[in-house]
Image (tube, rainbow, N blue to C red; front, side, top):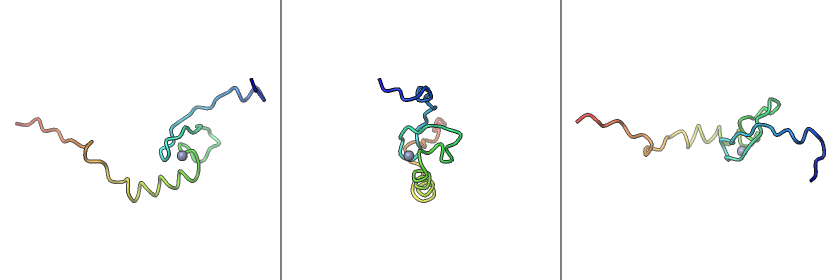
Length: 67
Ligand SMILES: [Zn+2]
């Protein structure tokens, strides 16, 4: 038991960082949400514009029920 303050018992809502998938606290005072940090926010933004903008074709199966 190591409760330092009553506020520590209040757990913030956690979201998965889109960049590193690490749990990040969703706080109104976190300007980087839903990212865990400014670093992840920058990385994700760059990747999105460069590499990961391309969607995996394996998930894009067109409906082929017309036969
Ligand atoms: Zn992150």
